[in-house]
Amino acid sequence: MAVQPYDYPASQANEFERKGHPGKFLQSIACSSGTTTIFTGSYFGVGGLIVPNGCTGTASLSLGGDISLGSLSTSSPVIHELSLFSLKVDGGGPVYALVRNQLVR
Image (cartoon, rainbow, N blue to C red; front, side):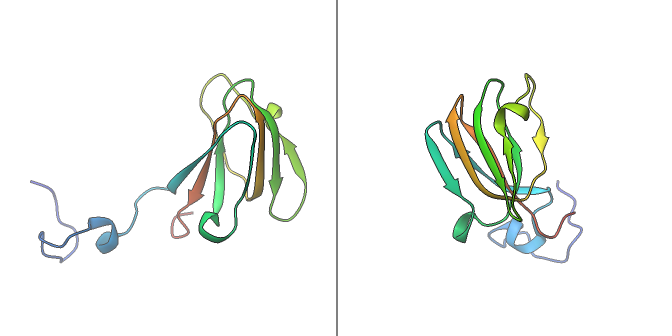
């Protein structure tokens, strides 16, 4: 039996709507090789990246400046916390862009 820390009937449909999202990231967006993704509109709020080893491309930050994806790629998965405007993946993708939970810092 699950512990119920909130006073909601167990029959309510979606626990995440009732209790909130517990993690730092809410959603992932797979950005394939040969694509450019702009993180506005429904993609707004990207605050993390997982970059596979050998990946090439450019991450553009929300207040300016670019970072080469090659400098972020590692042989083991690492989440790089960055405020992104766009992501251009030239090769070695997919790169996973992670949308932040604005309620968890």
